[in-house]
Image 1 (spheres, rainbow over the protein chains, first blue to last red):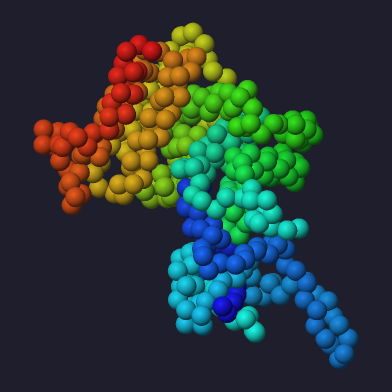
Image 2 (cartoon, rainbow over the protein chains, first blue to last red):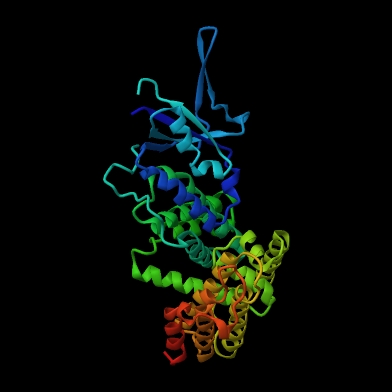
Length: 112
Length: 294
């Protein structure tokens, strides 16, 4: 079956002001996604800004991640199996990340 | 580093223990506040909040660790150590405090440490109910510190606005600092007086959840549960007195009727028309246990 990556972006603000009880509820909702029958992988990306390497006139220029300007950070991803984009999007619409104000980018893993 | 999931199956993605984060927050705040001194209550709260946030950022992808309590405790302890060093809190003591914190054992694995945690919670309630702190503020402070409730949750339960509750907490914490309140449990006549205010505050908390009919039912029920939990904690401690057991019994009997108190439309059902089969038998038994001079 085709694989799709759900790239989870957020600006972190939704979680900062939550109570412990609300944090637990959110954690449970997200965790449930790691065991869904269609989930094949899930990874969190480190909270540091990362590095971006760009080519400038043929020479690589290394910079800290692009996050200083963009508000939303790629926090992690889930890889799911779905028949096509329609189904992948339909599944992604159920992801709690949207409930907490985040953005989910759905990408087809080419060749799967 | 590989994800914990799939590398031995230690991680768990099932639902966590009910109110785990809330209860752990409360007891960890109490524990760190004893170590750092109640004047640094804010630091303790921030370290604990940081641990919860870290869990929220990592467990969604890797599942919960095998021992969530110990994980949270370690992360909170490290956050507290970082904060002590960064903010140079109590500069002269910061090295000692860091060393003390680093040497702490994680709670649920060791029964002695578990006992210590309960003792810390008890001390915290007893301090929050100091007569210098007005009862309304003491309720909010207990909910925030030992209870692990947020300002917004307390505000919702009291049908007050967030700013008013936040203000109440700020004032209560100022009292703690200015009057140098400690987490020592008083003795003799002073203990008797303190127990009176502990009982008053816990009953006030319960009543707040029980009487008002409007507002969000769920948070009000949580308030009743918390009052019952704190009452039981005091009743099971060395400072218990018959009137503490009486309070717990009273709250248990009243709470037992909560499920029968509203009909499907959410309207109040008076005692004589309540469906008694919906009363909580376990709570009734719990009430009788405390009434029977345990």
